[in-house]
Length: 139
Image 1 (cartoon, one colour):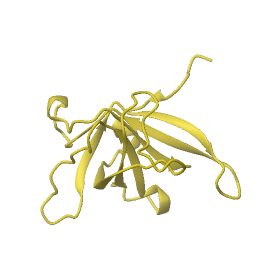
Image 2 (cartoon, one colour; image 1 turned 60 degrees about the horizontal axis):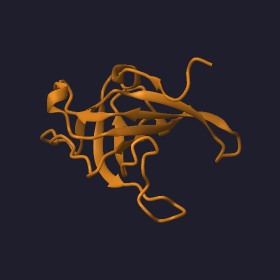
Image 3 (tube, helix red, strand yellow; image 1 turned 90 degrees about the vertical axis):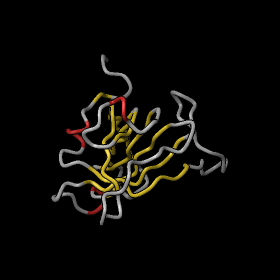
């Protein structure tokens, strides 16, 4: 098979209306209680709570967590005055489908990865420093 691993995808394909970050927290491995690390880079993983700005998004599709691998906690862009969250864009995104069998019926879910986080419209040189990340969502 020609495709192995994650499939590259554009930010605007994943979030055509943009997205907003609510906050960031370290991800801890459930079994070992130690910080979880990215398999590809070995860097610690951080979870960014994201709200999809798509007015049609409902339920679980409205709020997702994006995993970002970074040596230090990613710094999010400044809040927009009057709003409790920050508009963000993710750079160099890719999608990795997997089977989520935690419910009654297995379903296909997707983990989205990004190599960087930036303020919307900012050039790559002004991006928020990060290494890589992922967004988990179920279809």
